[in-house]
Image (cartoon, rainbow, N blue to C red; front, side, top):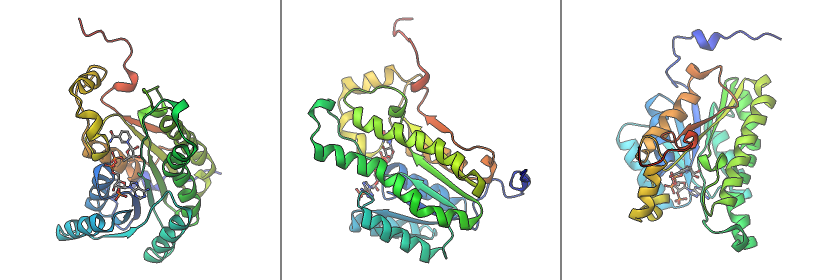
Length: 270
Ligand SMILES: NC(=O)c1ccc[n+]([C@@H]2O[C@H](COP(=O)([O-])OP(=O)(O)OC[C@H]3O[C@@H](n4cnc5c(N)ncnc54)[C@H](OP(=O)(O)O)[C@@H]3O)[C@@H](O)[C@H]2O)c1
């Protein structure tokens, strides 16, 4: 079957006007920047997080700026809460979802032999099982939209080894391969599936580890652009992968990393 690429020639290639979107973990950091980016491009956005006070404040701030964003208190590491979140999304958007951004993720840094089974389960359910199950739940809505896309927030840790991050890396590697498989499985439904893979981005999640000056210098030294990334530098990549302008891109993991993942041997003494 040959499908016509009408989207590629549409005058709205750089707009998300009329599209519906779910962004998980949108109250802070990268998720917050993604919410702002997508509403700015015209999408109707629903988000979620666990802390109700922070969520309400975030929604107030966004809606005060003229955006229309809704939200649910939901822990995506919990199966029942994922089901309830997607029921809300379905009723909000009349059973049709154009964009799902799987942003929630966390980290536990320690040697793999020191992981307890509880820590392992918690990291896997937050980072990977949530993405797998939310994709399953979203599939009928993405298909019904006839123009669906999924973007997951992975990490450079899914490509290269980072100290004390074996389990987190495994979850991100799993997201990367799920992305490639779903891109092929769901292409027939006109659902594109991509991911972005950031290196260090200035958010609350990495504040503590980066407060160590020596460590920060090490980070700069392996990053060709020589600095940390901003949440907005990730959200623009996510938005691109959601826009009709990227209609022929699927199954890709786009590194947003200042060149860290392609940096080979770069001695500090030139
Ligand atoms: N920052 C980096 O350097 C970096 C690098 C590579 C990859 N990443 C990836 O980027 C993504 C976002 O990270 P970030 O740095 O922006 O994190 P962040 O600053 O900690 O923000 C995380 C957001 O997700 C929400 N959240 C966390 N756990 C949740 C859960 N179980 N259920 C629902 N909401 C939850 C948080 O709100 P509540 O706490 O209120 O729930 C918050 O809104 C993650 O997947 C992370 O692995 C980040």
